[in-house]
Image 1 (cartoon, one colour):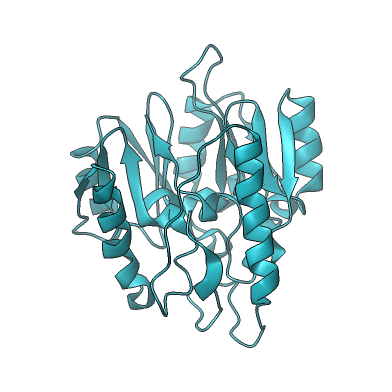
Image 2: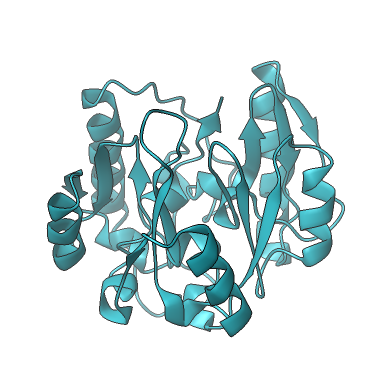
Length: 263
């Protein structure tokens, strides 16, 4: 995770961003610290990266790389405003003795690559290119499944689909997703791969409910996603709502703030 001490909305590169809406920096930091505390209370380790000066979106650490084991596929940001983040996250990962293979095509880390035990779901359409899916598959030892995003409000895969259980334990893999974010072909793919997936309404998705982090039981998600939290509880999960509405001003929430280091 990356401290939001540089967090601002100074440009607009997605439909959620409006530079005329000021960010409350102190409130954003307090909310981020509450998310860190929630992870640690659940027993998860949290490593913190210090942001580069003048990089307001570096708080969205999920976009920094795709990490599985001791290998990472680095990022290459679509917009020049975020370009400097790629090298910063790569340097940090190398300090942890992770081999980082730089992306040579537009690729935005776990924003568009979601890891399950048996497969990586790979988003494209707005930020990450199809060529990056092919390249990433030469770096990460998992099959990759391409999913096409078609609604600009859901510009990254991690705001259109959430991994509830990665399938590495006793339970099968389980996901939730908003069908309207995907092309018809990709909806068909998701139905075939995950026939029992939790289908989410547009309102639930617009509350950034799918921008979640789950350990297979505890699901950390924004508190605005109340309806989805109730549905997750009915499904056998333990919702853990957190307040992160300052980050919605930049089109991000729980998962965007969290780079998961997958085994």
